[in-house]
Image (cartoon, rainbow, N blue to C red; front, side):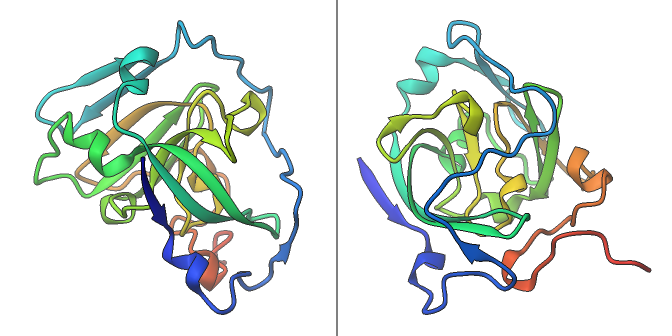
Length: 198
């Protein structure tokens, strides 16, 4: 299995501004936690693609996996260092659908109804993956299992739990969290947590 180290873990100062380090892995969820049977789980890749793709659990698990070592920064100010995530790289996954040149943004769709958006170039970073394991264990539902997105260089709400769809888009569109007060860019090193008052 290919091993990738997120470049943020190589910083001299690894705790982003306004954060504190914890060994725990708090569970923060708005609303009930979806319990998804892997026999029913599906991942759809659609939008600005050459061909729509729908993967079931077995098809997803048969794709080449990587391990990513990355830090995890929650907007509520805690950071957990040296997480080991296993899953499928986002940039390899979307190749299956064929990314159209018009694609500039990505919307993540979740079981439970939530969405979050990011620019395509952020999502194509080599340390972005759809993770099914964390620190050697299957990803529990409370932390987004069976599969969640991991985007190490953004606050954790941009790493959508319970992923069910990847929509490639020509134009940006705010997701659930962004419409409800959270920053569109979410760069933890610049403390882009919430909307700025205009």
